[in-house]
Length: 149
Image 1 (cartoon, rainbow, N blue to C red):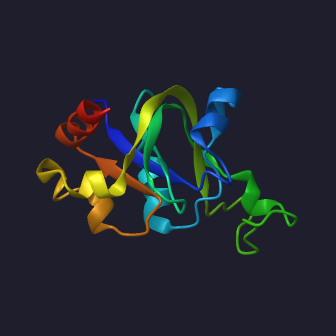
Image 2: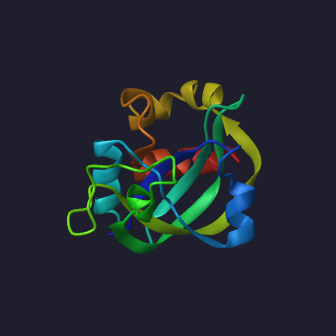
Image 3: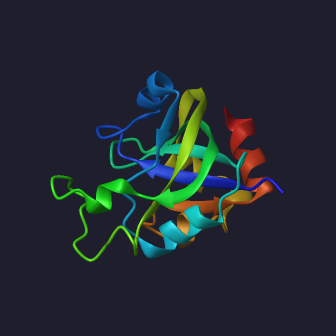
């Protein structure tokens, strides 16, 4: 069964345009246990909204697809990386990532304020789970957001 997700990234770090250029990328650097667990639940072919965070306006910028299941995030072992975790060991990784492939950029960013104004999204995990960088999206929520583009 295909599932839907919303995955946040700061566009100054990695944007929908960066993913368009790379075509496929590891979604690394996630350092929240619940977000990590959501990645471990993902299946091949799951769809995700690429959400630009921290820049104004924030919002849904594009679509991507999970193309590789969760595997240990190599940045946790790299002492020169900002995501290094001294507690993580190659034989006992803590952090995981999935690979995603570019599907498309939306013709316009669907801003958070616009999402919040949609009655069909009132219970969306994006609003309930706050600062978590990966959240599930229900099929009705997915369809309602796609209808806005």
